[in-house]
Image 1 (cartoon, rainbow, N blue to C red):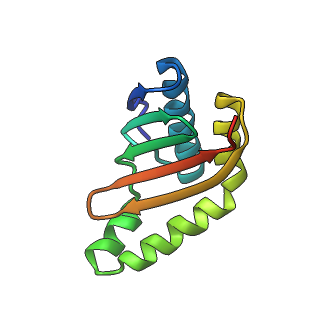
Image 2: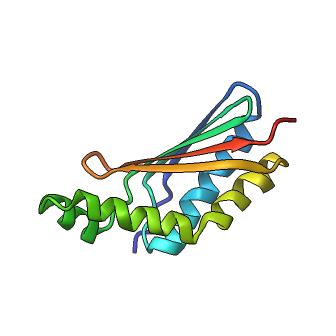
Length: 125
C-alpha cells in the first residue's frame, strides 16, 4: 500500500480554504481506511449551504475489472452500498468541520473516469 499523500486542494466562496482542505483530507482517509485504497486527488468546494467534494483515483482493481467486463452497474451497486453503510461517518466529517448538521448527502461515481462526487447539503444557518 502506497504511503504517498494524495493531492488535495480547496476552493471556498463562503468558508476557509483550510476548512475545505481538512474535509478533503478526512474523506480521503475514510476511503483509504474503509476501501483499503484512497483517492489520489481531492478537492472540496464550500458554497453557501453546500459542500461539494471531487475525489479522483482510488478505484479498486475489482471495480476496474468489473467495468472492463461491462459490469458498471455492479460497481455502482457496491459503491452505493458502501455509502449507505458509512453514511454516518461521511456526515460526521462534514458536520464536525462545518459545525452544522448535514440535511442530505448524495454520492456518485463514474467508473470510466475514476471520479467520485460527494455532495452534502447543510441545514440552513
